[in-house]
Image (cartoon, rainbow, N blue to C red; front, side, top):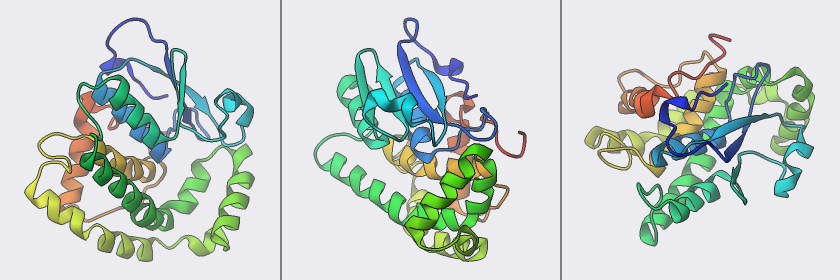
Length: 242
């Protein structure tokens, strides 16, 4: 289970993040949930996680939504990782994640880049590992829904070599930036870093596949991201330990 104790601040927790778990409840691999975990840590907000699986729709029916993350903050319920990040900026304005105006628009563009270019490449690398990491009761559901979406079998989608080639291409501008900057958002991580890192954490938790060359700037950035917020992500259980 994700340990949030290292960055808890404030009064006893009335915040809950509903969080996707796998075959072992300690496996937390949703890229969207990881965006929220890091954003909560960035804001220094105390919360607890509530494990959720793909077919437990009734568990989050109160949110009028069928996917996680779901954030419960007192009487407020927020769905969708990007909307949660925006809510956190509006409600807890210290340490901005996305910013406003032009900064927000650039963050929105980067979100779309991650979801439409980076994540599809990662999916080709780790899809069969991901299927194995999912709870056995959810595997048929996962296969049926994803194969309907992609219009092919998961075994056809799974091609780590092609996925890494695709990933290297789409990461070219990211690597160029990280040659000049410690993080995507400058000297310290913020929203853009969390948007991208969430997808890499997804792959990191479920797979033993190498994602990139260790000499690439993004590899060094990933190691730094594992260490931020008292090593919250770096301490998360993966399939290599569970």
